[in-house]
Structures are given as C-alpha cells and as structure tokens.
Length: 184
Image 1: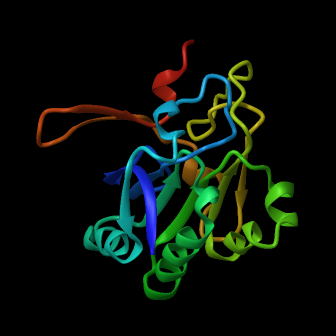
Image 2: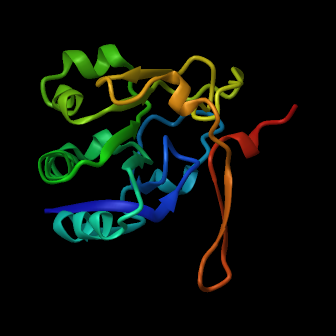
C-alpha cells in the first residue's frame, strides 16, 4: 500500500516531544486561510512511498522516541495511514503524534476516522485560523487543541519546543516548527 507524502524529516525536536521522525502527507481539501504548508494541498504533488518502506525508514533512526505526522491532511489517506500506525504501535515503542485540521467531534463520529484514536498518543486538532495566533509552540492558532489519548505525555512534555533550522546534505535550508512564524 502506498502513501502520498510531501516530505519527511528523519529527526526533529520541533514537531513534538523528544526527537521525532516527521512525515508531511500530501493532499488537503480544508483550504485554511494562511496555511503554513500550501505546497502540500494538491494530492497529485509530492511522491508516493510504500508504507513498508516508510516504516523501515522510521525504525532505522534509533535515537527517535516517536513519529509525528502532519500535512497536508493526513486523515485524507486513512487506509495507508492506519497501516503505518498499526505497524508502529504493534512492532515498536515509538510514540505517535498527528496534526489534523479536523476537530475531535468530526473524528469521533466518523467510523473510519475514529480508528486513529487508539493508535495515537497525541492529536493536535482543528482548522488553522490565521486571525487567532497561539502562544503554544505546537499550535498554529489558538482555536486548535491538543488531546492526549494516552498517559505517555502531558502538557509539560510539549511546552518548551522550539523551531529548528535544518541544512540537508545538499545545502538546502528548511525551517520546521511553528514558533518561527510568529511575530511578537
């Protein structure tokens, strides 16, 4: 099974607690005004990767404590997302964090979407609203919410996260994390 992704980052401390493997999925239909990742909206862009290959990439980085999945909108690709999350949950001790534009009530009432609730440690939920800045380093806007679905983490584990500047082996610069986009 294949997952359409925009990009991946093998280790980041800006996208959840501890060092994390980060996957940005490709495809989003929510059209949030001022979205941080508009290049991830068109489902036909990005690249396809086999879920088993992606899983092998994730587990190859031994110092990571978890996986963060963002987008785009990860929940648009539920079948491959569930396959990946099931492998991570059953075969590793890695934690999982998902950023989604959906609300908890939208996920909870949808039989297919609600399957992620038992496979995820932290959900960051809600449409991004450009007019509602947030002071929390993992929230793009103050209307979004953080839901801890297991007791693995608490708010103190995610309160001191800062953005990162990453330079890859080709000299490309990437900024990850939300705080850099805020103005004081």
